[in-house]
Image: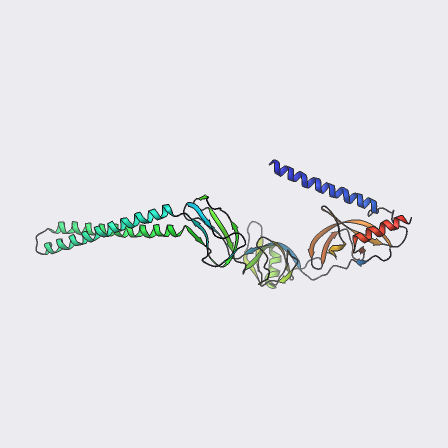
Length: 364
């Protein structure tokens, strides 16, 4: 708890420092509402005009990439970890050994079950022979019918005991097989949960494997929106690495959640190289749903001070540094939620803009 508090305090101090530094910079540059700017136009500065936001691109929802096939393999028997054959990020084929557990106790159970089976087989053979002799004697009326029935019951009990011993041997052999944990399909090791030498109990996680060949994203949409998507099941994906791809398939669940009144939509990703990793964020854009877009500016035009962002705005030949509230970053630029309006002009090179502003102030 103490370390968490110190980390939170450090982040808070860093944010305060960033705000203080940007505030000082804004004050030095005149700020958004300060009229103390350079006396003349700034010439030779590379600028760009904030364009009107694009329309008709649909509305986006945040989602998380997940693997269609992902399994956390758990111990089906207790023991000590003898070997961890593969580490995180290793590609494995179906049937590849991932973890080996010690099999001393399990093998002892196999040996004991095998001995019981041998004893049961011998007892069953003896009981069968006794029953046959009594049956022959009963035919000549040397033994009573009740004696024959007792021998038949003894034979049946011996056969049942033999079959039970055979089942115990099979079960013990299966337990030995549980000491070797194999990959269920071709995939990548996402996580190893144990180290060699550790003791594990039944049900304890050993390794997590996923298949990168099939990925999906699930998002929850309002009912009305879900019906629009159902009528036009198309979607595009904006991945965390700024790639934009079309969805392979869009599946709208047939029922809404009774608690949230939302409908889940599953979006299957196409085959990608490199494929996004499960757990990474992405935006799912549905063209069928009308949305409002924000203006975008080039990423290189943004001044960053800690968690605070700003841009140099050029108006009437004069520069000022204006704080911005930013949204999503895409290959087309960074969304500006607040701080800029379409038609305004900004400097593309913040360093050059700062130098030009200082030079303009020096000429006052």
